[in-house]
Image (cartoon, rainbow, N blue to C red; front, top):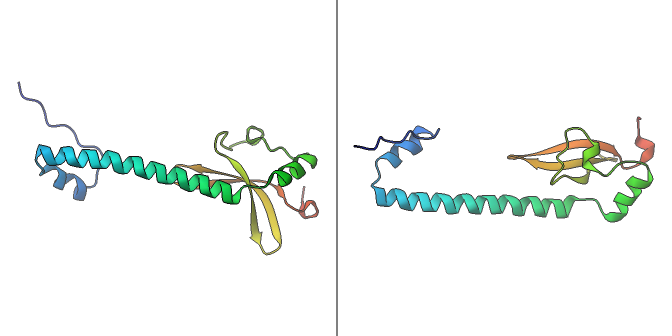
Length: 125
């Protein structure tokens, strides 16, 4: 009984074909390296998310100010905002116009959801 050749994952031909030409020992090395590289990339992504959050999150005083204005700082109160990993940041859309946004990582990109103007007089609500 002979084992059947496995079906390759959806890989580009330029990656798949050279792998298929490698001996088993080399494929084991590639597999180990690929696992280590994937782990490192996930760690780097998490580090980036953590650094961005620490750099861009609003202060406790700013959060208190939002709450005093009656603006929720709970992500579950906002449709479409991630309940895990979301934080509030300030974005300046054009000079002098600053707004609070929820921000979170989704896959390989950052997502944002408007909350309110930093200066209540800029409110159009």
